[in-house]
Amino acid sequence: MLRKKTQTKYIFVVGGVMSGVGKGIAVASIGRLLQAHGIKATAIKIDPYINVDAGTMNPTEHGEVFVLRDGLECDQDMGNYERFLGTDLSGANYMTTGSVYRKIINDERNMRYKGKCVEVVPHVPLEVISRIKHAAKVNKAEVVLIEIGGTIGEYQNVLFLEAIRILRLKESDSVFLALVSYLPLQGDGNELKTKPTQYAIKSLNAAGLHPDMVFARAKTPLDKKRKEKIAFNCSISVENVISAPDVESIYDIPNNFKRENVDKIILESLGLKSRGFRFKDWAHAARRAHSAKHRVKIGIVGKYFSTGSFMLADSYISVIESIRHASYSLNLKPEIVWLNADDYVGARNLNDLKKFDGIIVPGGFGGRGIEGKIAAIKFCRENKIPYFGLCYGMQLAAVEIARHVAKLKGAHTVEINPHTKYPIIDVMPDQKEKLANHDYGGTMRLGSYTARISKGTIAEKAYEKHTISERHRHRYEVNPKFIAKLEKAGAVFSGKSPDGKLMEIMELPRTKHPFFLGTQFHPEFQSSLLSPHPLFVEFIRASAEK
Ligand code: GLN
Figure 1 (cartoon, rainbow, N blue to C red):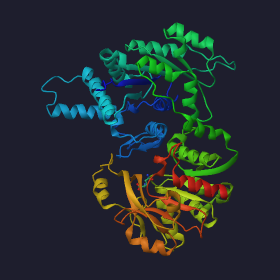
Figure 2: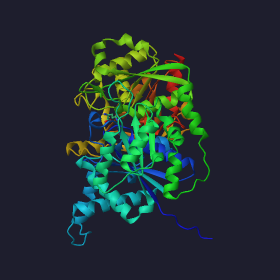
Figure 3: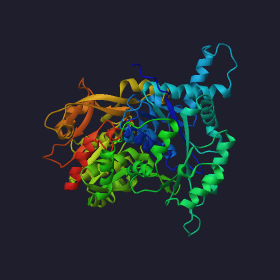
Figure 4: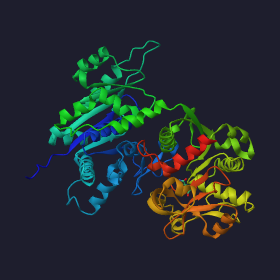
């Protein structure tokens, strides 16, 4: 019997009142629940800015730049989707205003609109809809979750709201719209105020849309009275007003949503049937965030942290989550401390690092804080403090060993000193031209590459295999001319590209140091609660043993 082709369903998630209320995690959590019901779900992020991708943006502007397997540089929410859904997403799952406009303008130049007048409406929303449908197809998804960046009421995302309106007009039974809104606590009382959310819904109404569900993000749970108030004033059924208070661990959110019947309401409303609910593994892993007794204290030496008087922890979200995944899997509670690289310049304050069980130098670009990072790495090496270098953190570890063990005075990466006598880290040949042409967007070594792991190394012990695939985002590499010198100084290149030319992992043998390892790639882009990254697990284990 031929199975009737079911229509793809679309769940749009928009944000109200303010940004940063957790739309991404809401999308990821709904997706996780649908998956637990046996439904194939995928997630799309739409960012309203003109940048074609997130690659050229400074992390203080936009948080972490996440890299997909196919090399697309995108918003950190894509990382949340991958971590919750346990699947690799592709560039088809991401768009910005810039990428949409670029396509439309190219199509117009190529006469694909057959001489028509190409207009903002309907052509932009139609292009958005066509991309959403394309993503559904390449992911073979029954349900597509679409997060619209920005906040309701701002000018930036109106064309995306228009896309929802048009899709709903055509396929009303297949579209579900959720608003993730914020409810402030008034004064020192504990009453959550609903009015800003009511206004957000009115703004949605002005765009021709009405939400099917409202997530009430707030410090505390939403009581029945306030639920009824939103329901009554905004014509939404009380059950569809969801209490979504702050949580200690984001991995509890799918379970919290379940308790509020979010999955049941969405399934019913879209005419979908559960194929049995399998959620034990997630619930079990999520519980470990609370049950761990012993602590492990990890310091991250970086620079992108302050914007004005705020700290921007978002810049390293994947690193933070990877530390958590690995720690939870070992029944440890991680304490993560931000360390400003500049504090260690001139070998100041280094003794403070002894307070930590392990130190990470994450990815980075440019010169600020670099001497502080190198000083911190040297201190970790000499004092046997577990050290994990991610991309820049590996390159700088190579520079450190070159300078202080191989005694190559002034050794450096050419990113910082193009005239160094000892260019330990050099620009890749194909990159030279790109830099000369100021061709910066999407031109680094990006996305997944395979590497071979050598026997008898920490990397082998961690991965338990000899071929790996990891994601990259960098222009510079260990200079082949200095490999012999670095090896003589004790460095072991335990991961290499299949042709043996590119150094992907550098470590010191266990006999010399409990854990000193750097990766040219970004392992943090492939870690999840249910599948913690093996190198993070090894690093946290060594840290806990310290
Ligand atoms: N700046 C270095 C490079 O471009 C490292 C990049 C990174 O850490 N992602 O190679």
